[in-house]
Amino acid sequence: MRVLGSTVLVFEWLIVALGVPVAINTAGVPATGAWVFLAVVTALIVLSIATITRPLGVGLGWVVQALILAAGFVVPLLILLAVIFAGLFFVAVQQGRRVDAIRAARTVAPADPEPDGVGDTEPVSDGR
Image (cartoon, rainbow, N blue to C red; front, top):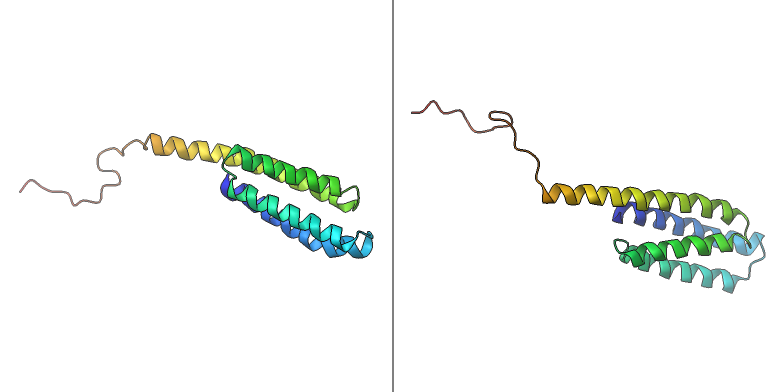
């Protein structure tokens, strides 16, 4: 889950960061408010990535999704981006948990040994 969830959050941050100047210039958002919003989102994303394997990290990721969706009421394009990234984050969390469970099962129960001779790299001895 660490890789998938973190990747979604990093790309989401990049989109929001690139959108700040657009929001200031086209939507009339005050510069201070836009930069403070980006700072809050940045802090939440960093904390979420740092704790992504725990419930707190996933919860913070959802808080980020909600904040960006709420910002969409000021800059309407963010609604579309928030919905897309929330979907990606949902899939990343679900698939990441599935992959983590598979990895944990593999480390607990090693794979079945190969039948004799298959995958054997030792030279065959003729008994001498």
